[in-house]
Length: 397
Image (cartoon, rainbow, N blue to C red; front, top):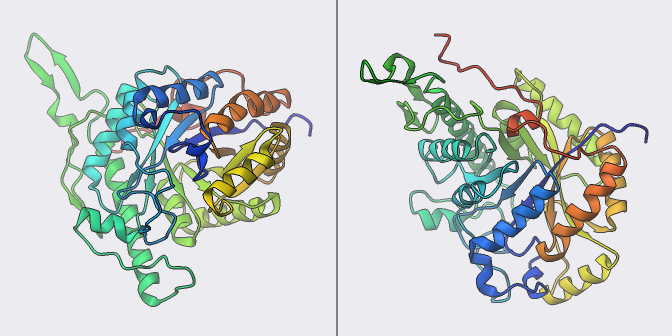
C-alpha cells in the first residue's frame, strides 16, 4: 500500500494482561501488581514507543468472567486500582503519554467525575481523556447500594425490561457527559486574575452556573476546578449496540469498536457515520479506534494454547483476538485502516510478553510502512487527534 494514512495507537492496560491466565506465566511477584513501580514500568515502555495514550479499566466490583459478576473461581486475576487516581499518579512520571481512564456514568455523580478528569488534565498538562462507561452489572449496583439492576446481561435473554433499562442507562450517560462538559466550561480561561493591588483573585463574572436539569441529574455548578488545559478533555465510548453508537455520536470524541475483519470494520464505520447523521452531530467526526486483543511473537500460537490450557477454556472477548507476528498485525492494521478505522486500541494478552511485542515489534513495523509517527507532535491529547481546543460555551454569553 503506497503512502498509507498514519494510524493512532493506544494501549489498554489491565491487571497482568487481557488473558485471564496471564499472571501465571509472567515473572512478576504477586505483590507487584498493586505497587506503582509495576505500572510506571508499563507506561514508560508505552511512552518510549510514542504511543498516543494508555487506558486503564475500572469497575465497581471484582472482575468476573460471568455477566452477573459472581463466581467462585480462585485462579483468576482479581483487583484493580482506581483508574483515574492511577492515571494521575503516573502522569507525574511521564512527559508526553496520554491517559484515558474508565469511569462509570451509572453509579457515580457527574460533578465528581468532571472534577477528577479536570484535575488529571491539569496535572498532566493536557494529556487526559475519559472513557465514559455504562455499568449494567448487578454486582456493581449491589456494591454501591443506591439502585437495583436486574440480571439483564444473561445470554439469550431479551425482554421489554432489558430494552427499557438499557435505553435509560444510556440516556443517563448522555446527561452525565453533558453535565461534565458544561462543568469543564463553567470557569472561563481567564477567570483567575490574581490581581494583588486590588486583592481580586477571581473575576466572578467569568464563573458560570450551568443550571442543568435533565433526565437523571440536576446540577447547579460551577465546578471547583478551573477549566482544564485542553478546555474539553477527549471523551471515549465503547460501542457494541445502537444505544452506544448514539451516545458516542452525541457526546464523544473517540469511539471504540470491535470489528472481526476489514469487511466488518467497513460495516461498523458505516454504522458510526450513520449514527452521527441521525443525531445531527456538529463539529469534528468521531475518531474510530478498533479494539483488538493481541498475542504476538514467533511463539504466539503456543503461548495462546498454554494460556488457554491454564485458564481451562479458550480466551473469549468482545473484541477479536489476533494471534501472530508483529508484521502480520501491521498488515491487518493497514487493511482495517483502508476500511475507515482511524486507529487501534490494543489489549495485550500478557503485559509481560505482548506489551513489548507491540512497542518494539509492531511499532517499528508500522513506521517502516509509513503508517505511524516516530515522535510526539502536539503536547495535548486533543491535538494528537486533530481536535482543536474548543471555545468556552459560556464565554460568548
